[in-house]
Amino acid sequence: MGQDSIINQKIKPLIKKSNAENSYKIQKKLGIDPLSARLFSARGFQPDDNLIAFLHPRLGDLPQPDTMADYHRTIKRIVEAIANKETIAVYGDYDVDGIGSVAIFKLFLDHLNIPNLPLISERSDGYGFDKTKIDHFSEHKVDLIIVCDVGSTEYEAVNYARDKSIDLIIIDHHQIKHPWPQAYSIINPQRYDCKYEFKTMASVGLVFHIVAGVKSKLEVDGYYKSQALPDPKKYLDIVALGTLADVSPLKGINRILVKYGLKLLKNNQRKSIKVLKNISRINQKNPFNERTVIFKLIPRLNAAGRMNQAFLAMELLTSTKTKKSLQVAEELNELNTKRQEEQKTIYKEAVKQAEASLNYRWSIVVSGENWNLGIVGIVAAKLVEKFKRPAVVIGFKGKKGRGSIRTWRNIDIYNPLSRCQDLLITFGGHSGAAGLEIETANIRKFAKKFDQELEQNKPDNVDVLEVAVDAEISLPELTPTFMEELKLFAPFGNHNPEPVFLTRKLEVVSMRYPAQKHISLYLKDRRTRKTIRAIGFNMFSQRNKIKQYVDIIYTPEIDYYRGGDAVQLKLHHIIPA
Image (cartoon, rainbow, N blue to C red; front, side):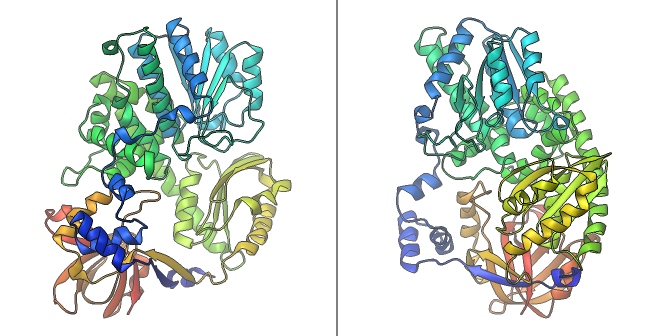
């Protein structure tokens, strides 16, 4: 399938089923707009307590975490270390989840004047932690190591810490296999013996629960009076950052944590976050929500890890001085600008390579010398979005390269990758995303074999793109009441996406192509004859689909850019009517 067939891909809307009787009961119970009720019904809600809990997330509804395997053992050891003024090392991965986890512990320990040694891994070190980190902590006379967002597969490093008589606690959410590393304790809901029901918290969420448990025990055991202890709820802004950055499912506990965390982020309770918001030039016309965090704050924090200076992000999150915060925020902003420039260069070259291979290979495998390893994952995701197929992006230097793989639809990439392991140095990941290390000389052979293996999982008709749609509606259904009630569904994200609707046969009144990159349309409803603005970001290549009448798949939103009193449609797909 060449580039032309990608652009002209047939769109097949898959409209979710909504039970009319159930929708009516929800509407009556809540006293809401009919379309809001249909949307709740389409997403599987009943007029019961689960719907009420979704609408009104409360911290008081968080389940007790004491059913986590090793929970009490972990709390007891950390309390013991604090009571004895032991030096505690905290190590985390280089993404916002790992960095945020370390930041929470540092803020908590600093408040209690407990000696601590935070350390963030750098992307150049690779994923995980090793003996060199243990040696570093040992040289600083560390008594306890807490490892966050990594560790569940680090057998060698854990054994090395034991040999040095250093207790090591792992707090992680990634896959873990039994027998697991022989750490002092392991907090990981993925353990088969962990009875805690909610399995999809990011590490920051787990750390929040552990810190809350430590705070409670320090008070109950009489080590500190209540007023001398920090309130863990003040760390929920960092929890929200890490949870959103890790694209964790926004349901259950995660929804509660993010909802409250967003309030703290919005209200600038942390000086350093306020400074970062100012540096990020957030448009004050727009409401501050999860999209603001995902597209403005998280990229700047993640840029530190992508550009091999992850410690800067931790410094910002833990800074209490405005001057220091401003200095670090400016550095992060500069790193993000540099990251964007490198990403643009790599992406442009990757697209050229991909287009050149379309006629003889279905999957995308591209590579380049000295491509930034912190950026190849983003580029892989963008290639998937553009070409509608799995993509591998490899950066190599000399005889070795490392790369990231992202999938398309629900195609399993892990098993095909595993069948190529004879051509790889190492690999890891899951069905939707993976990483690999490879000898440069084997890249071409790998590309051929990986493509052959993928053929077995390739959809029958790759020219048809199935798109999930919440409901087929008419434009008059987008009432002011419904648009206000859309806020009830937020925060949006993984497992709780923005609503997607289908409206058929709208008349195209006018069209523009801003920056020769986007599509801006005015569409007229056949019955009311009213027009509405629709904007398709980065959809310029689909302009040939615009006829006199079109069907559109879209998300409705308030046009804050033009005053915030009108609805506009954010286009996902255009279908000639």
